[in-house]
Every structure is written in C-alpha cells, then in structure tokens.
Amino acid sequence: MDFNTVMQGALTLGMGALIWFIKRAISTWDTAIAKLDEKMAGAIEKQDQRISAIECKSNEKVDKLQEQLHNLQKDMPLVYTTREDFILTMNRVEDKLNRILYRNGGNGNE
Image 1 (cartoon, rainbow, N blue to C red):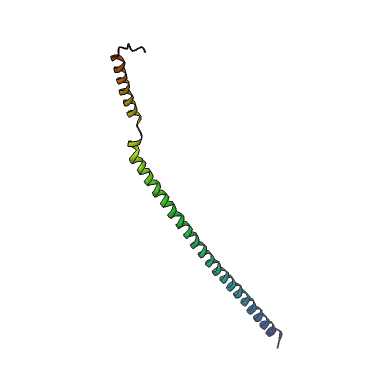
Image 2: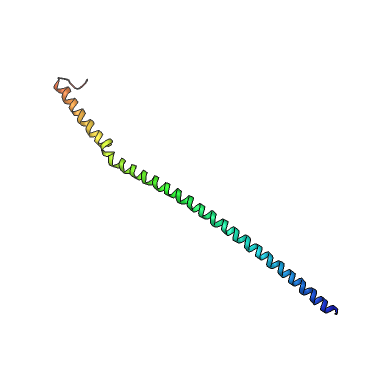
C-alpha cells in the first residue's frame, strides 16, 4: 500500500464521519423543531380557547348593556322631564298663582 491509497482511505473515512455527524445534527434539529411545533400548536390552541371564552363573555356583557340602554331609552320620556317641559309647566303654575293672587285682591307687589 502506498501513501496515496492510505490518504484516500483516511480522507474517505474522515468525510464519511463528518457527513454522519452533520446528518445526525440535522436530524436532532428536525426532532427539536418538531417538538417545538407541537408545543406551539398546543399553546396556540390554548390561547384560542381563552380568547374565545373572553369574546363570549364580552359579547354577553355588550348584549346586556345594549338591553339596558334600550330600556333606559324606552323609559326616558316616562321618568325624566325635559327642560322645555319643565319651563312650560312652571310657567303654567306661575300663571295660576298670579290669577289666585290677583283674584284675592293682591296688587302684585307681595
């Protein structure tokens, strides 16, 4: 065996070992990436469930607020008096009081 044959054999073995280590590293990385993908998918699904639950609760609260607002708007004319209605009513009350005052002989300076 001459030197060239030994060197070719050594280089072939070295290249084979190097390729084997690279292949093993890539395989390890692929396995790690697959595990991370599974964890991420589980985390994303969990977050989606939490968000869906929060959206459901929020929608229920919004619906309840809309119903309360509708009821308030419906009852508003019956419960509250507008400024214009108050002024008109007070003017009528003043007119009636003035008629009573003048009918009883008052001169309006009292």
